[in-house]
View 1: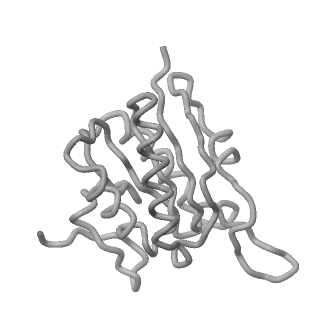
View 2 (view 1 turned 135 degrees about the vertical axis):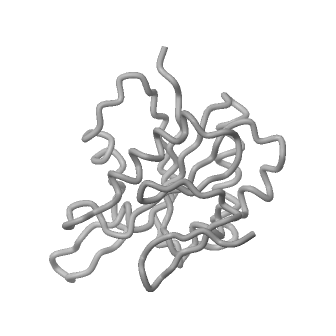
View 3 (view 1 turned 90 degrees about the horizontal axis):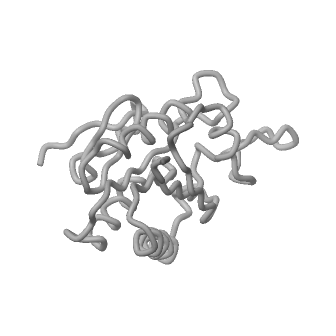
Length: 172
């Protein structure tokens, strides 16, 4: 029997596409299916939810509340690990919000991940980060985590180093 993982997309660079007409990258369409089609996942049942498609700098308190409500609803129907794709600029903020509001009763891992470079660009990290998050969802203990670039961080022990475009541990 395949293990279920909820995959909730909120947008961010992992979902951005390049517009040839404007020369910019924007959140226009969902790309999760393109990522998942590149992976062999015979023992996983991915329940994907396209919640929103926003740059994380544009996320509001109402957006975070919607994310929380969606995670809660999924976990009430069937407790399975959750992976949230999210823009990296406010990923930690959303993760801390989830941690604070899901509380100590959380029985599964909730993992946030994203990308610094969109799919289709040289050195895109989205597929790597999504793959690592799907693995981490199966082995991490309950709690809220951030998984990026081969590293697992507890959500309350990480920050984005914008100058180097990486996540780093914080001293607790």
